[in-house]
Image 1 (cartoon, rainbow over the protein chains, first blue to last red):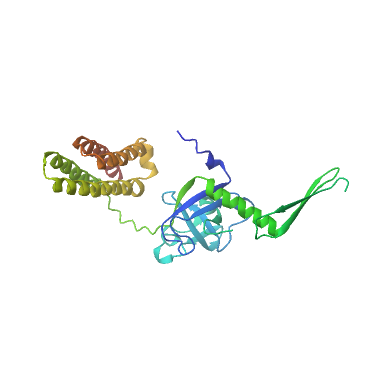
Image 2 (spheres, rainbow over the protein chains, first blue to last red):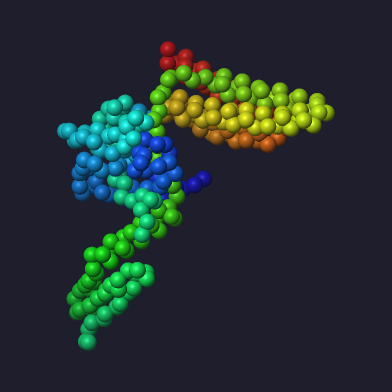
Length: 108
Length: 179
């Protein structure tokens, strides 16, 4: 049985499946998500976040499009091919896993 | 220079030389780094992390759940695999046998697809609470679909059908409970 020790780390790596964040993120891209970012700061408009789908707890990657009363409206960058807050509504901070801080497209 | 150490580090051939001064003072250690060096080091660390960390899947999907699910889709494809392997065993026609294997491969992929759709889209955490073997059952069934794909033994396809029947039983119970 795997212990999944990496789940204890402050940074998670996610691989993108699907097109709803195109062109920013394409299927197969990897991103690093900081779980600590929102311990000290509030999520801000325009930030890309990893969140749990309130319906089935699947991990999603979306961008914060509106903030109201500590609730967040998230959209995919490719809105015509995205299932997001337009389907499942506003999300709470507890649904947010963390902030996308790095993606595999960035080369140094 | 008493009590002071200066270290020079070069980060890559295109990067400017950055000076890292570590001053060993009696009561504290102070490290001076240029802003561009800090950004470079952070990016390097993140680049290493993104290579070495195990990835989980994050979905950026457009899903339009139609709400129509039925293990019958997987069962019909698996029945087709069973019949194909039986006909394969009876046949002496090499062309027929080659075609049988190709079509069985396609049916096997369809079985996996239909099982995955059921597993990920239909079944919910509350179902798992009631049927704790659900994940194991789907995992074994999709593995068995792979076994049935690379075998021409009808027994492998029959095992797959038996597993789909178990899933179907659970599916019907969840449907009945939802009414």
